[in-house]
Amino acid sequence: MKNVGIGTRVLNFVVDTLLVFLISYGIYKWHSFYVFYYGARDIDFYIIFWLTLVVYYFIFETIFLRTPGKWLSLSKVVNLQDKRPALWQLLVRSIVRIVPIDCFFIPFLDGTLHDFASRTKVVEI
Image 1: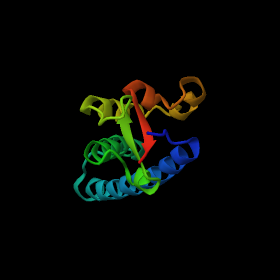
Image 2: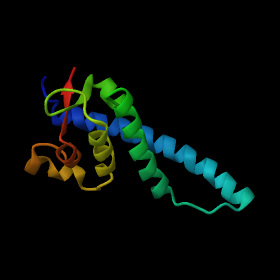
Image 3: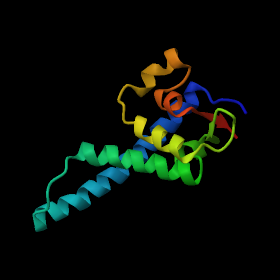
């Protein structure tokens, strides 16, 4: 299987981040209603965003091996042997995504930090 290029990875990132933002914003507005009317404890938007990001990637990549961004670019996540990644690999991959400088590791690791840490890669289908 052929690894996807940087342009495809950027497209995946933009589409998925937009979807995560919209989902997070909806959750935040729903939560704000409960804070205002019922006095629930307030949670900052960035916490909701990061939690949504981890859950979003973990659920989509566990069930489908791809997110909506990867569906758009016809790519999927596999382990280094081009097989389905283990559950722990997908969990590590999802959690490491919250590192803000994840993409800056591309020149040094020949991929992103979440690929390196989880021993996975994104390939074309």
